[in-house]
Amino acid sequence: MAFRSNIYKSAAELTLMAEPGLITAAALDAVRAAIAPGITTLELDAIAEKVIRDAGAEPNFMLVPGYRHTICASVNEEVVHGIPGPRIIQAGDLVSIDCGAQLDGWNGDSAFSVVVPDPSRPELVAERQRLSDVTEQSLWRGIAALASVKRLNQVGAAIEEYIESQGDFGIIEDYTGHGIGRSMHEDPPVFNYRVREKGPEVKVGLAVAIEPMLTGGTIDTVTLADDWTVATVDGTMAAHWEHSVAVHAGGIWVLTAADGGAAALAPLGVVPVPLR
Image 1 (cartoon, rainbow, N blue to C red):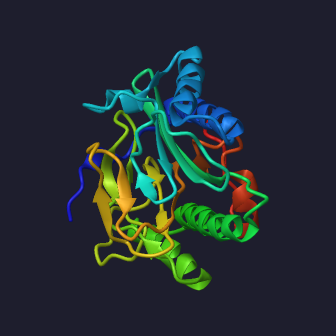
Image 2 (tube, one colour; image 1 turned 60 degrees about the horizontal axis):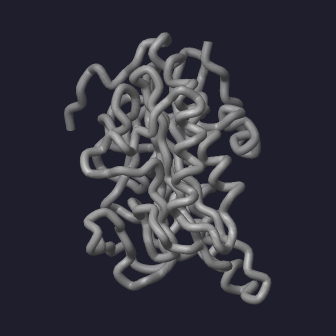
């Protein structure tokens, strides 16, 4: 498989990606703090938009033709691309929020999942939290691999290997991670599972968004009547975690984490190095 030579950024370009990454992180932090029973997904969208615009950036999801919102809010069996609207968040819901910001033509993209507390259904909450936790930790295994592997396909192998060690989960194959930079979605694709193609070299200048999506059952999905929301065919729960990561001369840096990924990568023996 051939890739464009310009998938690699200069040191100066990677540095310009730091601020939109941090703005994206701040917007997601604000949404995470607001998620509670009774709030609507449209209200969460407004919170993210305000954070991004107050920082002088613009929501890059709004730059996607036909999409008018700042976030994607996918609930329970919805995997990705859920459109914010009047849906009211309920106790026990598994909520996945995806968001991005563009500043001076450079992009950030990140996502998280959270289970809304429900003391009346501890087993349900624990099951959904487990799905989210495995998804998140598979993301960090992929990011950690990026620090040492030679080819991008090894990132997907590391993600799948961890997931397989944790139990029986479905790895969504129809949607993958991607390069990021001047556009939110660029080459190369970043698979969340083993593939035969080696992919491009992991070397200085690579910037990618790694985003595993797992389900508690089938990997088969369907796009709902709104032409955006992707849900599991069997109605089982889904979780989605994502970070944008830069490979630079000093190492790796998670652009969409305030600490560059230091806290999450430390147990994996990886020390991220700030961009200069």
